[in-house]
Image (cartoon, rainbow, N blue to C red; front, side, top):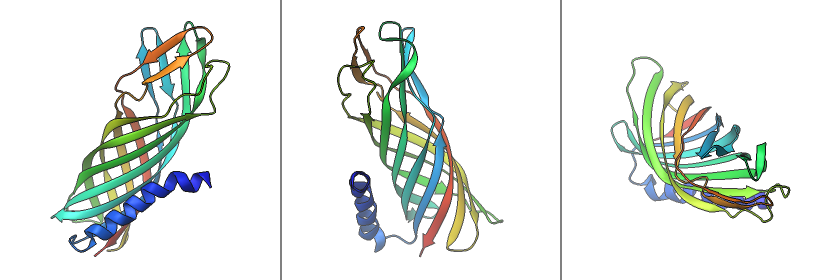
Amino acid sequence: MTLLTNYRLPLILLLFTGFFFQSNAQDIDLSLDYGYQLGTKLNYGSNYLKASDGGFFRGIAGFEVGYGTMLELTYMKMNTELLIRDILISPSEDRLSDLSMDWIHIGSSRYFDSSSDLTPFFGLSAGVTIFTPKNENLAITTRDLASTTEFSFALKGGVIFNLSDVIGIKIQGDLMFPVSWGGLYVNGFGGAVYASGTTVMGAFSGGLVFSLN
């Protein structure tokens, strides 16, 4: 039941947006992919917070607004671990909590014509990322860590292998920039820290694209 609740709002948003734009869009692209993010680290002094590597699922609804240009709504779900190294709280790197990240972005992508069955593309997007710590390590923190919602933006590029006019295989690389993803207060037995800043996360993925005319 919890899993259904977590995905309900993004799925409803994707479906609603698809119906809303359907009468105006020349083409509609729907894609589903699975990928792997390479994690990121936020330093504060000689200490740091770190999101570990982890997998993610992503859904994209794209609507043609000009020749080769798509307006896109993206929802991405990542699950990983939040690690900490702090000279007072945890001198050696240790798990602070599990970390769920929900990315909801609106952006634009440019798809280039190709004489072969390959379609290169690049794009950018912006929106919000919801960071939800859970299963906190009570040996480090004495209270639950609060969820936060932060602005984020992303760049992407890749290629689509067109199997037909309707379906293709997409390979994509991403650079994602969460703003203040580490903005959390850790009240531990040995002291307290507050870390905040902008970092970059690299990722790569593969999936299927369905084109509807």
